Amino acid sequence: MAFSNNHTLISRGTEVVGDLLFTGNLQIEGKVRGNIIAEQGSDAKVVVANKGQVEGEIRVPSVVVDGHVIGDIHSGKHIELAAKAVVKGNVHYHMI
Image 1 (cartoon, rainbow, N blue to C red):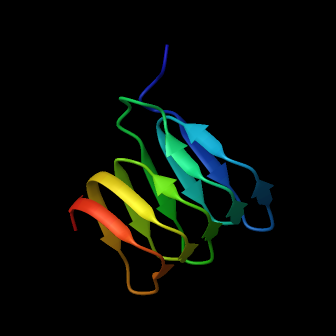
Image 2 (image 1 turned 90 degrees about the vertical axis):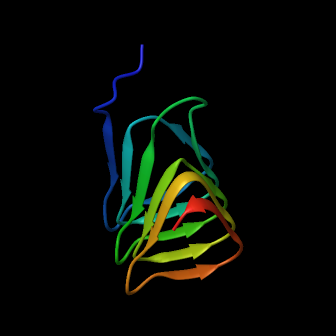
């Protein structure tokens, strides 16, 4: 059973290599080299913080980017690009 209040933090100084499949909220302040994918049917959200970096594809219903993303972003619901966001890839969204 998935809980809607799941919170995962990838803190500064942490690097994850490989794909991430998750539910709930994912906060990235470190670096992820791999794809980030929300579990099918979940109401997940990913936040790439100011110093956060993602090298890979993001497929999550709600996305907030204030860091760096190298790869495509697929957002089924909502995407927010903050002041310091840098995205090198295509952005697919329902609402920006």
